[in-house]
Image (cartoon, rainbow, N blue to C red; front, side):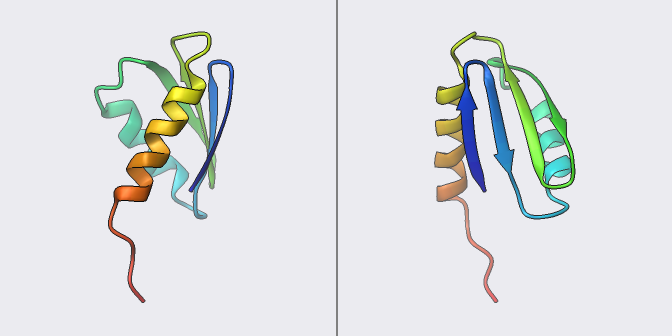
Length: 73
């Protein structure tokens, strides 16, 4: 997963087919700094409440992604 932020927006890139699941999980989590998400097949757009909150949210999500268990082949 990758994350890029600009002002109050964050664009997350996921593996194909994973974006809608991730967006739904974020929408249902207690993320008070998020207004909501829009998802495609492999991209999620996050809209943050704070006008400059994108960098913090992107950093937090990348930290979570780095600490999660990886798939094994």
